[in-house]
Amino acid sequence: MKDTLQKFMVENAPVRGELVELTDTWRHVLARRAYPKAVQTLLGEMMSAAALLSANLKFNGMIIMQIHGDGPVKLLVVECDSDLRLRATAKIGEDAVISDDAALTQLVNANGQGRFVITLDPQDKLPGQQAYQGIVPLDGDNVASVIENYMLRSEQLDTRLWLAADDKVSRGVLLQKLPNVGGKDIANISPEEELDTWNRLAMLGNTLRTEEMLSTDIDTLMHRLFWEETIRVFEPQQPQFHCSCSREKVGNMLKMLGEEEIAEALSAQDKLAIDCDFCGQHYEFDAVDCAQLFTADSPADVVPQTDTRH
Ligand SMILES: [Zn+2]
Image (tube, rainbow, N blue to C red):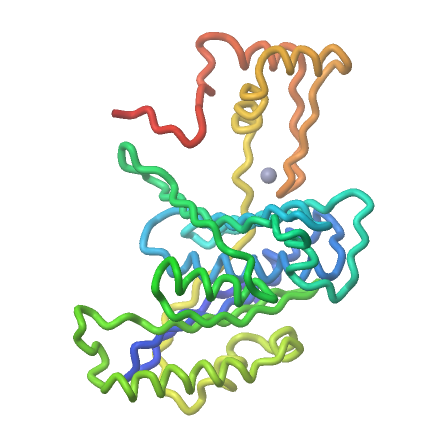
């Protein structure tokens, strides 16, 4: 079965939801590297979270989740674009010993210096427009609660997330309480009824156990959770693995290191070999390739994060 993201609305209540299931996409990520079990769980849960949040974005673009860890895990990166194309990677400290049940804090915030950054990067930026970056406090036991807090603070949206991942699948469920439009009740029910419905649905979600999420496809999960509710489902979407790396981007990265540094690296070896952290694609740049990077008419003259169009 294909990877699936299923959006739905609860009829007669301003509540929307999504379920996501990643198997192929997740397999592509795991095929690159063997991660310790706890890291695998964390990265897998971030993958589902990114897909769920991305399907919710009001713009065409990319969502990038990065955790810069200060514990045994140094970096976790998950990217998802508006077509639900995902890639992910994690870097673990050398000699790190990670127990199977290590919690989020132990993995990335052991000394309180861990940083979780969510970047929303619009695809077709207007002149002067930049990516939006939010720093997410790592104040929860797991990714789900950290993101719930972030959504409430940054978007003022009551959001509940349930995430689970193992070495075969990553699944997630999202529920979100929609804000009333202009103070007018969109579902034509009283605020008390609205809150009751929200609380009831959130409690249904809380009955989900990790084992159950790992072993049950999302259609069955949806039925088990909401069989008493009137649900309107939308056309399912298909998340998939995709890496956006290219020779040109790797060239740009080398260029940013500067001519001197490249020359020094080339004095020790006859070519520079770079493997993509996300997909494993191998790139080689010999002396001629590198010299081309620094010629005046090189097209790859891009300074990141700065928009020069006026
Ligand atoms: Zn790649």
